[in-house]
Length: 295
Ligand code: UTP
Image 1 (cartoon, helix red, strand yellow):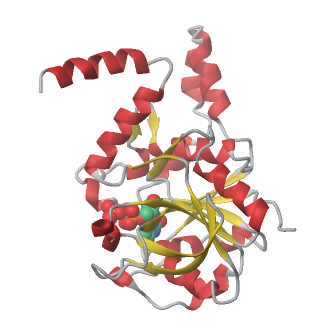
Image 2 (cartoon, rainbow, N blue to C red):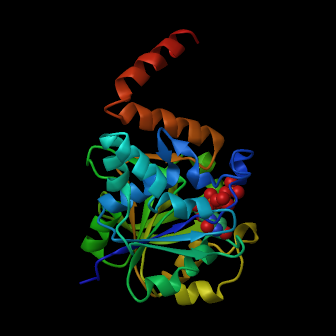
């Protein structure tokens, strides 16, 4: 039986160049979707999946992230004095337990594989989740978000898990792509993987979509791996090497993924997440209908 997944790594050291100028002084993970930073959506997904320890790989100019997951004494005191009970209790409910967060720095943005490697000592010798926080997810018919579905697959199959989604074949060159070796329906055994394949060469239209469960042996591989696509140390290259000695399974995520790392994706995330909110959704949809009627 495989060990339970208790820790999740959130690589948040990227520069966010696709959403400039917003990310000049504000980390892209702190841009808000509806009323909370993108990163908080990702942390909520991890909490719902049962993750107990949140490991953030940050970089320079990202200190705001650490503050967001800490107490804000003056604010909390003022809310209490003003009787803003709801706001205060919501902030308290969001606060991670003492000791449940760790922060380490990736001193230079050398790639996702390098960012994950920076968390090696905090993770230790146990399987762990990786969440790319600029991809945020909403549940589908199964009512759970993406990481919970990955952890379910890990309990079932063991090994390493990668969440995937389908894209039009002409878009595959922009992503990591996997092929199917044996299909079980929602999950499948992965045959191979490639990062940003040249146009027309992708082995399928199933792209790696930002949620992983990895065995700790990945760290040894990431330590020695050469730079790959884009001159960066690629997590996909590390996983490819690990797949020579361990099994990898794909999870077709049942739900919606929004890529807040691009401008259009960020706008769409706000629309989808606002529509799903029980408090804001109805009024927001009414406004959207008015806008659409005028197009
Ligand atoms: P992205 O490639 O989407 O992030 O990496 P980026 O580099 O910030 O984006 P652009 O292209 O410049 O707009 C996916 C995730 O991996 C993290 C990013 O912060 C993001 O959450 N990352 C990427 C790191 O932590 N370190 C890196 O060296 C690269």
